[in-house]
Length: 267
Image 1 (tube, rainbow, N blue to C red):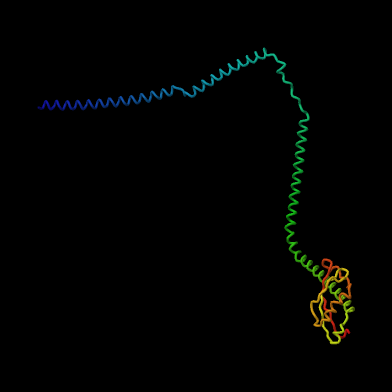
Image 2 (cartoon, rainbow, N blue to C red):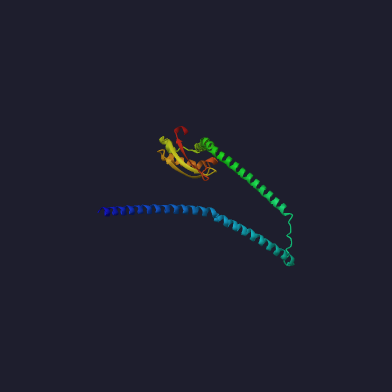
């Protein structure tokens, strides 16, 4: 029993030690493998040059070689073409004629353009100044016009009043002359004298520029027929009447209204 137990314990210990030993060996293998891999990569990267540098050097060297070769070939071809090429009369291009007056014409054109521009600027400046002066006068004009408007109106009214007064005065003077002539030719009717009738008859009449009677009418009666008849008859008897002033004529005639008095003192 004891021997069997000892053997079992020995086997267990042996198995356990073997497992630990295998684990230790595996760990060492892993560590060594990692170390070798890292070291190998570093050495490989150090040994290999940058691929871009290698390609650039290779391309530049090839380009230089190709350029030198091409230049040599081109020089040979150029020399050969110069030796074998014969100028043709059809391909000869005549030299262009030089216009010696071109620069002079261009200078004249530039000078003329500048002169036109200067004149244009002066004209525009004058237009602006004239416009400013016109605007200034326009701004000042309303004040003067407003101030002068009442004076102008008063002046026109005064002239009109003066002219109207002059016409009225001329008409009154002429009517007085007409009345004076009518009184000279007026007759007091005997019927009215016997009855002692007096009164005033108002008549209206129209005359031409020479004073000839064109028409008459009784507008206000004196109350006595004989007196009213005499008032109309005296107009025809005294014609032609004094010539009316030209300023009182309307369409070549004038119509007036005059009262004719009949009193016993006139008898």
